[in-house]
Length: 21
Image 1 (cartoon, helix red, strand yellow):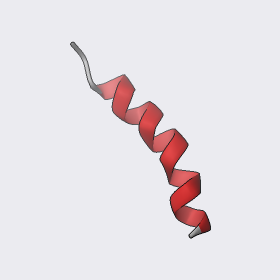
Image 2 (cartoon, rainbow, N blue to C red):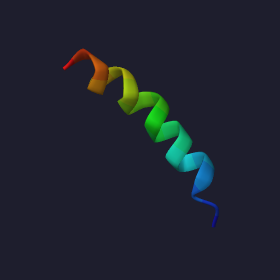
Image 3 (tube, rainbow, N blue to C red):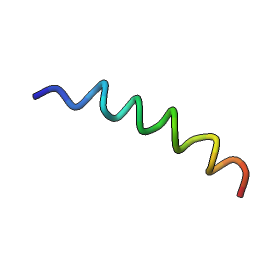
Image 4 (cartoon, rainbow, N blue to C red):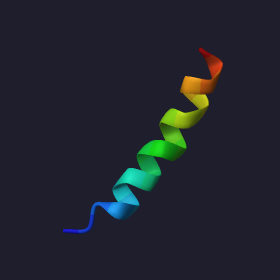
């Protein structure tokens, strides 16, 4: 199980939310 693409997708979704705060 490769977590790299999962982590990248999470960062892609969480990064904008973190910047808004």
